Length: 588
Ligand code: ADP
Ligand code: MG
Image (tube, rainbow, N blue to C red; front, side, top):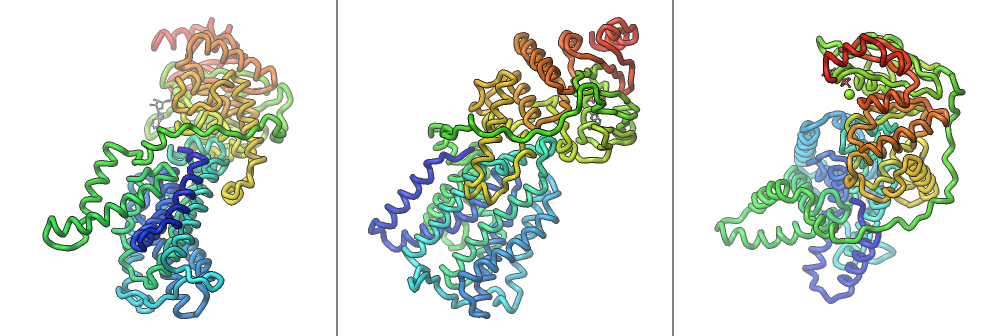
């Protein structure tokens, strides 16, 4: 996923060589188009590859950039260098409006909405008199810089590819940052990211905006390169083609965008010569071939062609050293014995099923409280109600003296409650360190712009320092640079605990942390939880391993069929006839 740091230098060297070689003008022109496509595809890498939002509307944003500069330079005489920014502003306004309308949609609705958007903008451009209808606008000026004509040939090549290289570099930097990790978490649904305090809607909108702006720059360049605009390069067909290029190249890789643009353009040129000879008529039949290739790619090579190269490249080591980074500020913790959590008759109904039926209990600072009960008793649902993942049907939750009943999970996370999940939720293609650093999201503040300009390194070191500290605390120091997806189940669960600890919580909710752990790992987990308690941490634990529960919990709450059965010390619970009946009646 993370593009290799030195890839950019290989690209720059290749581009310089091309510029200096005596290549025919035809090839320079082709490379110019490839650069323009690459820009739009870079946006799709962020949008579709990183954030998992499929868009067929990328060409429409290219169109907004192109038409803005065309109309403005022709009608107002403004310099193209100024209309670039006006076009970007217009694109941003359209993108924000569209994002606001569509990004709450899930599944197939978003791609469909982007198709509708791509189509309507095409007809809008084609039917407006002021934009020259389907004939478009002609006679645009060529781009000049300090008197140089850089609108064609090698001048344009230098301009376009400088922009491509800078954009690729900015995205590589972005993906390796606090904001980038939040964006990379979007693909796996919003649950975990929100629980780590990430505003997923805000990051989706940001990603959408960046993708649209890259397309708009491509459109601006395109308009002045062609010195004319008409609606056809900005319609739905081209929107599909941009997605095609990106998927073929590798939608999850920054370099996949450039690979895809390059190969598609070369293939298209060949097909435009070959197909009419084969079929006997001319027309843009290459789109049919593209469709077939796309289906085959999605089935057999969903990671795209760049994945072959990526697999063979050595993994770039982080050269930064964060051992001396200052510690992140910590929140004020409750005094030992203070009431931390007061669960007041919470209830959850799923249709006719009452999964949690008026459950009440309390947790004091420095306590480990176990929530136990047979499978389906409602423990995970109780967890989700307390942490704000599910909304309460009735009842309330008071956390450190504040009602948190109606709050969203990320607002609750911000107040100092953190959790793990019964089914591990992680980003498999990020390292363990990066996954854990996501837990410290709310303790950093650097955004997209400082990440792109690499002005975020001090804060990043602090975040990594904290992530590494929490991993070592939990005995995972040796896995820091491993890809999370390569971990076994046990270490994955421990990683989730380290991630939760990274948020500097006052209360930790652990949903079956020992499931899938080996005996030694369970013992180590018990030791870690005891140590956390000794440091004043309060913990709510759902766990099936009764030895562990009885061994480390101060207090137990027992549920059965969504209702409260009993509570007490582990010894009291072990001797309770009701509890024995509940367990003997079901699983034991
Ligand atoms: P536990 O964690 O104690 O095993 P859960 O809280 O996962 O139990 O589930 C309690 C009950 O609620 C089960 O009967 C389960 O099928 C039901 N349930 C849980 N989540 C949902 C949901 N999203 N929609 C409908 N029913 C649910
Ligand atoms: Mg459960």
